[in-house]
Image 1 (tube, rainbow, N blue to C red):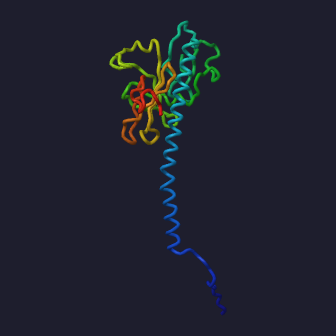
Image 2 (cartoon, helix red, strand yellow):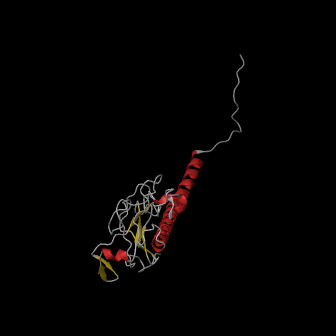
Image 3 (cartoon, rainbow, N blue to C red):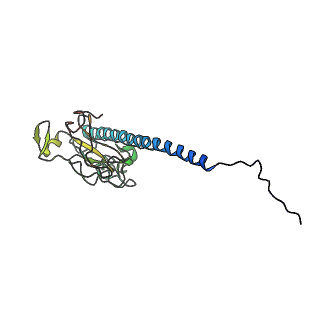
Length: 223
């Protein structure tokens, strides 16, 4: 009976040392790349957070200046349009400015897009309130700024009446130092303020941006 044998002469392969060297190189590349990717994601989230603040401010200004709810008075709304992105046309909200139209609220009438609906925080933007929301906008939750009687603005104590002449929205991250590092706030003057979070890594962000910018690294700035 004939027996066939394989001739292994000339066959080539990788040695264990070569494989270990390749693994070490890949590990070094990942060690350099991953932190940079995380920083890039955080920067993108923060850029989106700043943009969201400006969008909300512009929408509120339009709602106020043009009396979009047809109430006869210039007033503000603390409603984005509900926490459900699929059905977020609440009456007299930024998604549904005028609820008196017989045809109902349409996307074309909305002052903000539906991605803001799920990002509306369960709590308002009071200092220290947690930024929890059903569906964050690029890692950020947003909330209407409710002033307290003990809030100090530019050296003066003010009460709830401050919102009679101004309005504000704030944004904070869903995971401090993971989805972002900075809290953002914007008010009627359209200047976006920010503050580096004091929350420990991984914890839910808290609204910390101040109206006069004293919480920022550079007063009044968002650097």
